[in-house]
Length: 299
Image (cartoon, rainbow, N blue to C red; front, side):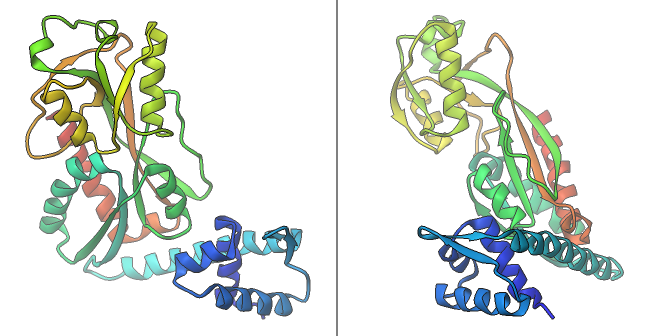
């Protein structure tokens, strides 16, 4: 009989690409992973892995096993959810990945709401870039991922994942207050210093395209993934930036806002595996996220 644990390692290899990545994600030694995969191959009685340079490629038989393993793990996760649902008290640990501004804007209120409605849920939150976090949630590193999507920059559509909209967040030009009477549209900021997120962030590519479509190449003097740094440079009068409306933090930005011609928005959503979505604790966290996001959008 095939061992589900070793089948799970084969599935991890299919998703992550290398034995080293599998070992790192599971805190195993690479030699342990290799030994377990070799044992699985003996159990299966057929070739599952072939060498291709420095990589291991999955055979057709191995890919078939991975597909069956996906189904078995989903059934087990669903069974666990149904067992938990039968209990009267909703409890457990829920692992969430959030990007910076969603954590600043949504996490405190979500925690406060959960403390009132489901105090026995333990929330573990990590900050990770949305695109990577989506893949990590599918592989089981997280139960819920909060992610963003910029206009015309669709994120990967992963199988076995369900997505739910949180809020459409307006994107506007942020300028120093002393320039409020001088800048009325994007082209008025053509000669000013800019701050953007580092490449290859979708936000940077999108903002760059807005400037180029408007007919100018922005003078990008500053680059930072920290949008609070963007706010501070604009407040100090040292740069302009295209920023989302939901930034979080302890106070609203002390900047002036200029609407863009197309009134664009970034789409903030959360995603989770179909199987885990039925777990009462995961569902409770998802509901709290939705509830607080609606309040944040209105404010």
